Image (cartoon, rainbow, N blue to C red; front, top):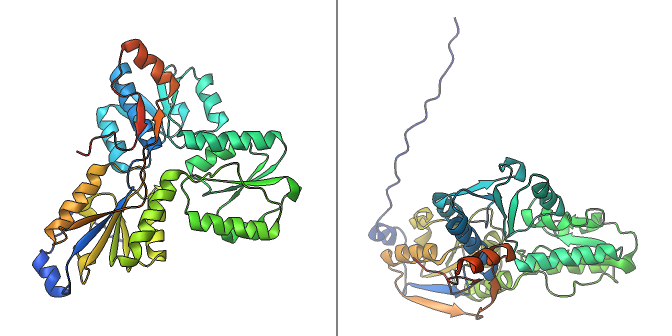
Length: 361
């Protein structure tokens, strides 16, 4: 008779967080402790608009409201909307016929729009207007028979949506390492576009290498990397050389949040970590650390940053200096499908989405 080993998982025991005194004893900090808080950080106008769209749809149509993919790439935001009655699905065929579905801020391809129409779904398009701009560029240059080199992360929802506008004309370039593989029909009619949430530096390095191969490669009519991504990277570049530690608040599937960690390290931060929530911060990170930089990705509500600041204050980092590198006041109108409903209902409480308009607690 043979016996089979059975693995019984150990119960989860909450980790005991070391006290500030224990951390100080392990690696004393010389000099005053402080936090350099990046500004801008957190919600951008496109994210704010998309989140408001789901909240308003729930308020006026009642739950459930279906959302294709995560409305924005943030665990806390998605969980909060689920509690209010939003149901997140991967594809439109998971949505009951005739129901309401919202397209996420990252955009969708024409095939997804057609699929929703075929199923008789009511739709609200919460695609960020800056992503829509890239879609329109793809359509325009495909009609003119250009080869389009789309710099972005294959498999990312935004890239899938843009590539779906003209799949026969678009090649996806994941980064500088793929430039040698690119082939085009006519270098004189080739243009590059990009995902809106990339590292500015890496994207421009990819473009430089592409232009080495194709000197007549055309630039997009205007910057594709969005203002919020650029601004958050600029802010952390200023902070990084002064920081022993940089904490980026943001989710693992948030491209712009992940890029902020990379940018911090590239520009001189001694260490950098990404967390969704303050309770993920490991106090061992504070050993020997005098200056902590803090920022957050463009889909992160400010309340999560404030939680991290409160934790830092417990460990002696109570002095917070805001490092301001830009002012953001961009606002976007809510999706047109929703505006009509709000107007009919006389709801004028929130017609716009943009930085500075949402509560921090």
